Structure formats: C-alpha cells, structure tokens
Image (cartoon, rainbow, N blue to C red; front, side):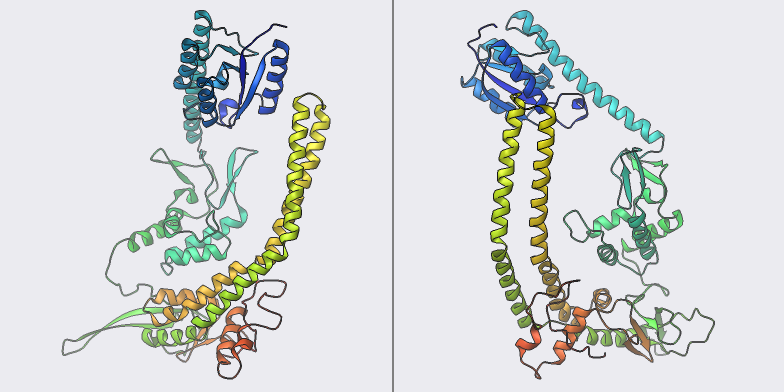
Length: 531
C-alpha cells in the first residue's frame, strides 16, 4: 500500500439525464471509492454527493468543493471517472487550472490514470473533451430520434389531458374516463351556448383540475379546445403533423369549436339566431324539450326600434307544445329572485368562518399527540435507514440483508405517513369545501343583483343542476326534485329568520362538523321549503 499525505475530497455524482443511465448509482460509487481509498491509503477529509447534471455550469455542491480546495481544506479529489467532475469546458478548465496553480495536488480515479504532470493533464483534458463530445452527440442524436418519431406519427412529449403516456409501449393511448369528459367539453363549446368559464366549471365538476387543484384558467381551456391532438394531429416544431394516436373528437366538432373561439375572440353584432345567456338552463314543463332564446327586433311606424330576447320551447317534438314564451327581463327577474333565496347573510358568513377557524384549531390540537408520536417514529426510522446505509457502504452488511431491512423500514415509514394523512383528511378534509361554499353563497346577492346573465346561469346550475323547468312563464323545480342539500338547507334557514334563534338556525345539532359521508354544508338541514 502506497503512502499519500494528501487530503482528498470524495465526489460522487449522478443525474437523471439520459447520459447517466449506465453510470453506477451514488451508493455504488461511494462503496467503490471508499474501497479504492482504503486500498491506496488515501485520507478522505470529506464526502460530497450531488444529484445534478454536469452538462451546464452552476452545480452548487461541486462549486462548494472547489471553493473549499481553494481555501486549502483539501488538495486532492477522488471520483469514479473524470466525467463525474465535468461534462462542460468551464468546470473542466477549473480542475486543470487548480492543478496548474498548485491548489490541487492530485486527482484519483479507479477507472482512469491521472497524474499531476504535463502528460497526465493532457490525458485529463482529453477525457473532459470526450465527455463534452459525448453529451453534445447525445443531444444531437436525441433530437434526431425525436424528429424520426415525429415522422412516424408519434408525438414526442407528454400526453395532453384525456390521454396517457404508456411507458410499456412508449406510445400515447386514450384515457378511457377523461377522454369522455374532454369530448363532452368540445361538444358543449361547439354548440356556442357555453363560455370558457362554463367549460372550466364543467371540467372541475368532472374532476379535471390544474396541478394545484384549482379550476383551469380560461387560457388553459382555450389551449385545450384549440389543440389539434384531439382530432388526430399534433403540433411540433411549429408545424402540424399527422398522428398515429386515436382521436377523441371528430374534425367536424373541432372545427365548430374553432369557429366559436374565433367569434368570441372579436366583437360582433348580434345575429338573429345567436344563442342567448340562459340557453341550456331550463326545460319545457309540457314536452320536456330545452328552452332556447331568440333575438327579435321590432320597428314601429314612427321609426322607433325595439330589441327583445324571448325564451321559448324548442318545439322539436312532434306534439304541439302549448307553453308560451317569456321575455328575458322577466326570466332574469325570476331567476334573480330564486338565487336570492339561497344567499348567505354576511353576518352568518363571518360567524361560520369563526366556527371553522375554531374547528381547525381544535382539530389540530386533538391530533397533535399522534402527529408528534408518528413524527418521532419516522425520524427514528430515518436514522435507522442512515445507519443501515453506512453499514452497507462499510461492507459490514451483506447486500441482501441491506435490501430486506431497507424495504421493511421504508414500508413502515410509508404506513405512518399515510396514517397521518388519513387522520388529517378525516378531521379537516371537510373544512376547505365548507369555506368554498361559504364564499359562493355569500356572493350570490351580488350575482343576483348584477347584470351578468352568464354568472346567474352558472349560479343556478350549481344550486339546481338541470332540474329547472319553465311552466306557464314561471320558473319552477321539477316535481319531486330539490336543490342540493347544502343549498336547500340554506334556503330553509333563511325562511326561519325571525321565527327561530339565529344560533339554532345556523348550526345543526351536533356541531358544525358534517356527519360521516359526503360533505354537507354546515347549516341546519331543516325541512325543505318548496320553491
């Protein structure tokens, strides 16, 4: 064994990039390097582990190691191969510059010969150059492969919503559940009776949200509705290409949606048959067909011009429908009156928020003991995992024993984490939807008194769903139908104002937390009053 008085920094690196697929894992590198250091009699002052690509400059741990060497904390580096230190010319130049200046006395690699001589630095420079050439060539080959994939009709990217990336076949396949929802969204929008906000609400109600769990923004909806991927083509490199994937919508429906996007994107004069705001909200009490809106212009002999919007049955069935039409102003008045019945008073909203905050605090306190105990057990498991890894790296523990024990500890840790999550969801999972419902109910008076008819349509859909009918110019609920329970309870609570104490109206017996099962609004579910 040779004697060496230099102090070495052990450096191990692996990234998730393609060029590192065949490289030893971090654990394997450390094991090999420790064994090599013991064999060569090298003194390891500290170990540096980094999980980042070396293609570009700016690796924080590598830069920290170089800075420590410049300050004299060590004068040697031990790594598996030169490509672990650098795959770019700047970081490679730093290493050679330190060798030239004397700040770095020695480099050691188990798989590469290197000495601090002119020949050694020449060979090191070649190794760094080869590493950069490999990365550059790999990038070119990757781009070439992507272009070839495109020529075969295969989209070289993440599948849009409604599709899934199949890792087994390396292709994009239809998501059977979500594709139906996306197809429905295209159909709804192509009818020109829904806004982008309506499509966003529909997708949210169907379980399609953004990554942070919120409703998709209108710009995202526009991107979805204008993505040719859904009818069988795809964009790549600024061009449209034919795809081999299965279409979700027909080209005809897609083109209709593009026309609607185009029309909505610029101001235009009302046309006679333009869909009106309340279309798709009500059905006819007599024949069951949907109620549609029609724009009318009346010109009097004296030159006055009057514009009206009438709502009436589509009368598409064979029977003659006797239901009369209704003016938009009257329909607006009735809907506004209905929505007002389900509004939440501001003082009630504030009291409910205070109760929710109190419930959050009490829930947190009640689960503190378990969370602390579970947290301590998780930290103990992490300590055991680290000790197990150290024993394996020191070759005191066999590989199979290490893998078995590691799997047991990870399984126990995952179970504890899931228990903590379940307890948190069970205790407070209803609080967020309750807060959202309070905001919606509190905002209903503003919507009802406003002039935005589309917002009124959205609010009515939330409360009544598709259960509103038009009967003899009167808006009613279908027989035996009631609003969703939280809204029905709020309407019943409003009807008890002045007849019952507020404290008894506001909260059901048993407290603000809803009973087990589906979330219900935190108000007393009194007998539903008919509308």
